Image (cartoon, rainbow, N blue to C red):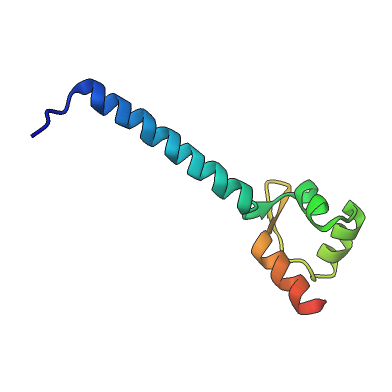
Length: 85
């Protein structure tokens, strides 16, 4: 039987933190944000703000407006473009 010391637990804790941080970084790199603002969407679609405004005005692009800021669900944007194009 091995005795577990405080130092061993601290070492385990640090190793676990490093591994969880690495997993989180990998997930962030492979999966985009679930919600995007206008600039994020412009970069994602490679279009101008005017294009986004037109899509919003014609109800082709689903959005939520919270305190004056527009938010777009990446899943909804992908769905709309897959259906239309």
